[in-house]
Length: 110
Image 1 (cartoon, helix red, strand yellow):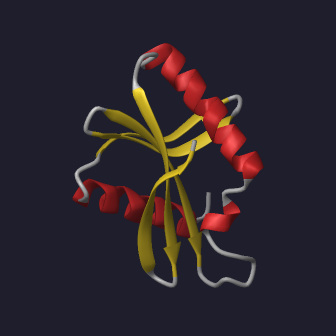
Image 2 (spheres, one colour):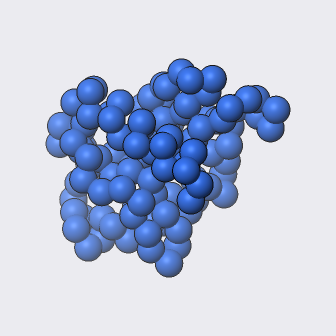
């Protein structure tokens, strides 16, 4: 991962913490892929994808979380839940960082 990627994920984790999320894991990896942040928002486990874009030359940060990426995130989440919290309430969020602005997209996909 690039230094910019690490900085973006750190900024996203700090931002989520200011919103009351408890960060449980970062860079969760399984054979199916990776999830940037696993957090808890109250009694809900939240799987968070972080996307940063310096410019919109190649599209928006949110648009970069395409169907293929969502499938991979869901697969990793299913593995995690099966072993750690099979009955948990779950949500998938995306944190975007564009032009220095950070934004949380709650329930960005199912």
